[in-house]
Amino acid sequence: MKKILGSSRAAIATTLFCLLLLWFHTMSLSMSSISRINNIIAATSSPTDTFNNNQETRVQIRTVASQQNHQLLPHGVLPMSYQFSCNRTYLRYDLCTIDGLTVLDPTTSTFFTMDPTSPVHVEKIRPYPRKYEDYIMGQIKELNLVSGPSSPQCTIRHESPAIVFSAGGYTGNLFHAFNDGLIPLFITASSFYPDGDFIIVVSEFHDWWQSKYAEILKVLSKHPIVALEKDNATHCFPSATLGLIVHGFMTIDPTLIPTSKTLMHFRDLLEKAYTQNPILPSPPLDPKPERRPRLVLTCRGNDVSSRRILNQDEVIQVMKEIGFDVIVFQPNRYTSLSEAYAMLNSSHVMVGVHGAALTHALFLRPRSVFMQVVPIGTEWAADAFYGRIAKGLNVNYLEYKIRVEESSLMEKYGKDNVLLKDPSAVQKKGWPTEIMDIYLKQQNVKLDLVRFRKSLKSAYLMAKKFMHKER
Image (cartoon, rainbow, N blue to C red; front, side, top):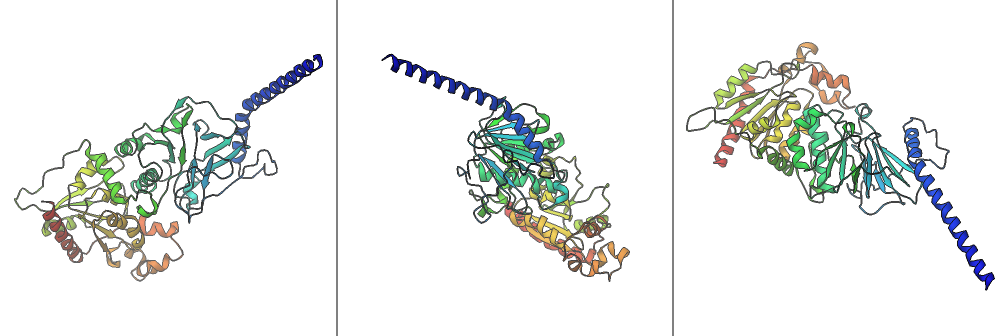
């Protein structure tokens, strides 16, 4: 009996000793994990893979969910045992999802997720949807995703998931702010969080960006924005999506969104954003009982030397003769979008030369009229960038394609130069900077008033028809 008791005590002592060793080992691992993870992140930032032969810290790069499956990464189906997935198969963007508790350390731009059963795993992403442009992507800040046995402690806990993206790149340009930012954010939110309950987390945050697009951002998400560069607290989210989904230039494809959202739904969001505290539109300029259609002529600023209408005063006179009340709109980076929305939402026609200012066509009402003046060599961009806005919003769309005689390039290159006679042939091999600069930065237009008058008359008839329906 004494032997049995002695043996039992020895077994218990041995078990306690083993548990003590296991606890000590776990605590040691916990204390060193974050330091080791930081070393891995630093190592993966190097352009050369100096740790490729080190089996313990090897970064395993995975690509999941082929493009044929769907735009979305499947929730709850995680390859291997990693808690996040990255899809790098798309032309325009990368997309990573973390399906579980996500810890953000903004001081290192790192998103952690706990996975005690697997070795440390690191991925990186530049969350800006112009992946095909090496130059601009090289300027986008890289973010880290880490799955490992430990993570930093939470300072601030959120109950809503995060959508993470960059407000860097071309965001200072109005077209790119919508095309590469706000519309993709709407698509991504509609795809992952259709209830609208998510938190915007921004890398490369700018105060002016938040101020300019404040009304839209508040409608997209009710939560305060988390700005990586302005925060040093550790944030915890139930899950996170890094990167933005884009369907093409100024396009929302309802077949790629579970909720079948379209550009009209985005227009509804703009209406909600800018009519919560509406700025009353100005009264009609003409006091006569028979109202004249209101035409907004969008012009390039005085600080811009290209794509200007050289005979603008004469063009305005023709517009008035046809029967329009004309408002000259010359936006700049400080222009209030609330005021621009109020003006265009109460107008019947918008006319302008191809350029970022035409992004304001998003504020036009369905069945109103949009006429784009298309300089030589910008035909494809005119349709892809702004023609799609009109189609997506059910706006009557007209293009006035200028002739060689209406381009200022004729004086410099001669009317028989291939740049003017056959720009499509010049662009067959792409749109290199030196060619793009000729068409976009060297060209102004002098409109043929007789020919342009015919297009304006068509716009006038459409506008009167629209006015009749809005009574």
